[in-house]
Length: 508
Image (cartoon, rainbow, N blue to C red; front, side):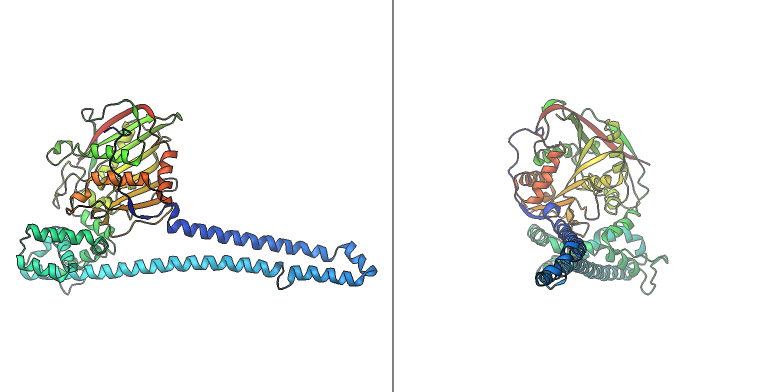
């Protein structure tokens, strides 16, 4: 359907929300504002205290001492009590300052504790991954003398499977051993159910990817600490491990951007998106242009443009995810949405896909001051977040990601990011971290899962989750959706809407 039409998907209510106006970061900011208010109160009381000295030395008050020494003494005593007494201005000002200090120290303690817990898990995950990687490499070296040449496929595939196997409950490990590697339907269903039911553990396993790469590298030549070619690796995070794996592929090349009028949605007078579900529905349509059986359309995106009732041009850029998951190391082709792009994107590097998106935005005539919303699924969401943080050519007002691992991404001030994550979809877990809890970044999780892990990544689920966001009363989600309304993206108004489709391919 065209975004804005009636009869959308059934809403799937949120099960968890992090960040935004009701997140921890926002609460900490409010507490720091409270501490600043306490500071101001203390400053004002000290100002009053300074002025009270003039009362004690007032000429008229001093002259009254001769006429009524008793009442003069009482007046002087009252002023002193109100200023320097136990309930006076000086003590009160110190109390306000002490409260301000206490609030700040408490916040620092909370944040330090959070960071300590995070770092502890980082160390545990890295160590676990390193042990598995070293053990696996030692097994290969013992079996094949030329094991070093196996490094890329093993680290990306077999080693990951070994790490997952190590975390499985004993019953499932036994069934895998007994099956001799043959995974039947029943065992596959049970494995998928375990993965779906343990997202936090899966994320921890992925977070050990850096240790796995380092351990495997060192294990290729046991007793030689610098690895098989005398080079030491230290990749403490999954993002850095992804960067190492990206280096196993040729240079990413340059993007070629071609207009695809044959794919573009019909332009004309029609409603613009009226809710987040409309945006996800249209992203699903664009994603359907490049199915596995139609690789000739890989790399296609669409840009929707209109001039709002406020007279301001608005644009939504729809960015699908990975087309080719099977690109082997040391190979590269024209498919810009492939595995090497995934590794580069997760590691925070520029890609031909991202540069092609920027080139398409220029070709579409988007002006530097026009507000833009980037909506991306999977790899498309990673690129949307990266573009928001790395371009000065456009005004990226909003970013929406669906099923994207974007924990390592930080949007600049003035840009709001909303991340949709589906319980049972492992793709958002592949950066090994929870998304940052910031005022500018809201992450919402919802549960519409099926027994099929692959199906849980489908955009159809995210459309229902987006409808749940539209209907939610959670303050952070209300704030996120209201921000998109305020920026003119979700007004539902009828306008002259233009659609432009582009295909991005990689050139050597």
